[in-house]
Length: 281
Image (cartoon, rainbow, N blue to C red; front, side, top):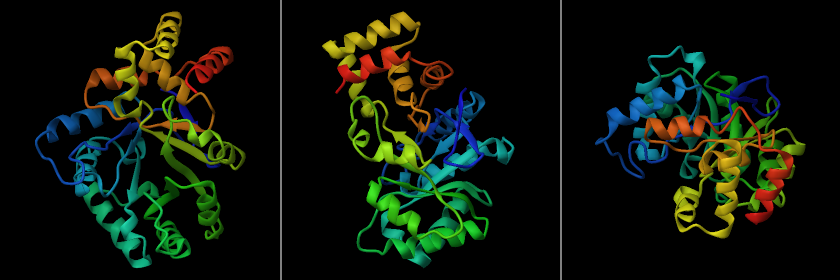
């Protein structure tokens, strides 16, 4: 596994981690595949994918419970846990209470990275960031991040912190969605902020296009053959090609975890990176 620096910190986390959206349910709990979910989380950590991403709204908290069950068998400092507070809980006291609930579900004394899941224009960001910094001061969270924030909102969030910095912005990014390249990605690069790419395979869109055998997937196939990798691994390697970008694809089977893990530890050449970038515009 390849590890990258988180923001401007000395922390190193997996370039390819594990996203847990829909492990344990979507907007409500689903207990029908709990054993499989716990096993896949443990397998991810064993493969070196030590960055496990969850959120209080995933499965109405059940995803956090599954992550908590899974990581009990590992020393706490071997797993980097990221979770997120939902946009309806961004008032000062609500943030504090939401974090306590997440800690309880996860069965831990602290989370490594705590993020605002989505911005809420109805609640002053200054109030939310004050609460986030309180959690940081109290040792409940190690790092502060945001998710789905524009450049303007990242700047505003940072301006309301006094003793620490925003280390990460979690946004959708992959060959299928390049919108952050216009402004947000260069901003994060300049300011030492990690971009955590979610849905790097477009929630199945790239797989579907591979099956349809379009002209641009022909390039994916050609590169896969040249590098001795799968088209999925080529796609994920493209995502993490930039130094400040990591990703958290979801996987529910060991073979998918192993395929994802095999997408790092090597690099597309600059020429092939540009080729793929131009074809998939």
